[in-house]
Amino acid sequence: MKNYILLIIGFVISTGVYAQGEWIVPADKKGKLSTVTFSSSMEKLGADIFKNNCVSCHGTPGQNNPIPLMPSPGDPAGSKFSDNTDGELYYKIQEGRVTMPSFKSALSATDTWNVIAYIRSFHKGYKQEVAAKVETNIPEGATLAMDLSYDADAKKVFVKVIANNEGEQIPVAGVDVKIVAKRYFGQLPIGEPKATDGNGIANIDWNDELPGDSIGNVALTASFVDTENYGDLTVAKDLKIAVATNKPALNAERAMWNTVKKAPLWILFSYLGGVITVWFFIIYVALSLKKIFALGKDEVSDEEQVIY
Image (tube, rainbow, N blue to C red; front, side, top):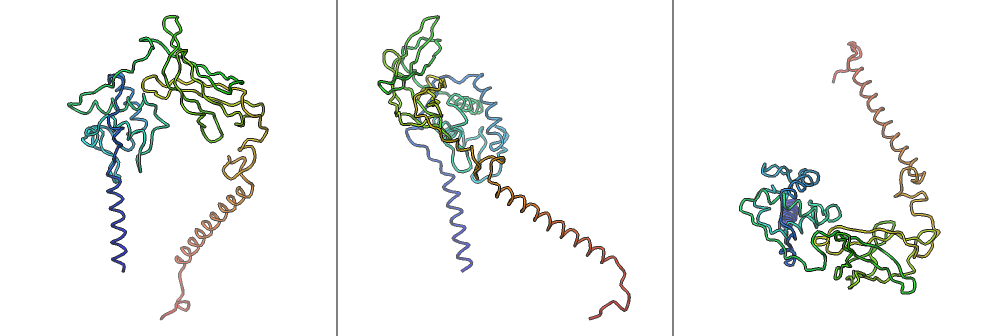
């Protein structure tokens, strides 16, 4: 029976290890390409990002010193990495799995490509394939700007995208944008992403029942959907378009998940009592051991000796 249980445990562990070793990237993600050619400046930026986020597990590229995990994180200079397409590397860095964390919220698309540029610098014979340039009406070298506004009659939030080119402002058409609203525990997507029209404006439906602060303000942030082609530009603005809500903030009262200063008193006293109790027993045991050690040093007379 014991051998049978050990056999099952071994099978489960080996199956888990094998499953972790098989990292299958969706077919539509494998062919993803950078829209810019990797450069020495990208490699330098990628090296800094790698040092701050990746070296603790993968080690220094080319030195084959990743930390001992199963499966191994692998040396970025080795074939475990070079055999991947650019799209596969991008997907794995962004999504993560098991012991490999997801960097989707920590690294932008630009940061991720910089890391890949750095990794590719260790792969001999690598030749980059660059994605075809997206055709837009954005002039070469122009800087982009966004603005947020609201139409109360239409109940729509408007995002306007402008390209500034040598003093001329050009509406950017055909660019997908999205909006999120700041909530207690993250960002709430508002409506569906929309493409800008010929005037560089995208309109997104607004739910006017969404609660805001005590005067009805809500913090909105607009950004591009395709950050690889258009960058990580965002615009944030507080608009007075939500339902005024006078409810106290979720962290205003004492709660188990709150800060120490606002944690329930019974938790604080219980914790303090537990700490005192543990230290009492530690001190008690230490004193008892000291007493036993002292007694062991005392001489025992012949009459006090017990012979078995």
